Image (cartoon, rainbow, N blue to C red; front, side):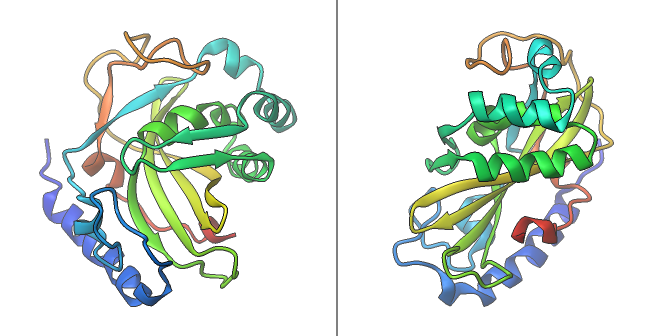
Length: 226
């Protein structure tokens, strides 16, 4: 396997710079999962490690079948997904509301996979934070914009899922995710696994991806600040 450590380090250094520049925009008391003040310490604050892994989320076939178009996906998601879910890496409770679902559907439908909206709870639970910065549009109610990365299997093909989380006075809110194909090999079967909970997959698949694999070729998305 190719050693991605130098490449990964370069990505971290590039992403770290804008966060450090925007340090003074942080709300009081903001901290990473280790309790340290985020304030531009991108790598140290999040304890990023390219060997960290996340499960590749696989959506149940019956759920995917309920979301063939953006209209059906929107109806299904609003009926089943609105609520609050906790991210394991940060300990944050993240609220999923109608506006976030609509933004997620907008992005996923453009990619041709509106059914990927069904992965919200599991992606929120397992995604890893990779970037924190100010709202590029300067909206006063958005204190920070967080980017998290997870993995999802779409028709058996691994995809990187990039989640946008808004930090507002009301708390952390999901504001959509988008997917991109990643050209990597995953050892093991991506079919049904053991363990896992929730209505979106029968179980967590045994396949996992490392953060190093997921971030390879990653570019910041200006759409995350819509």
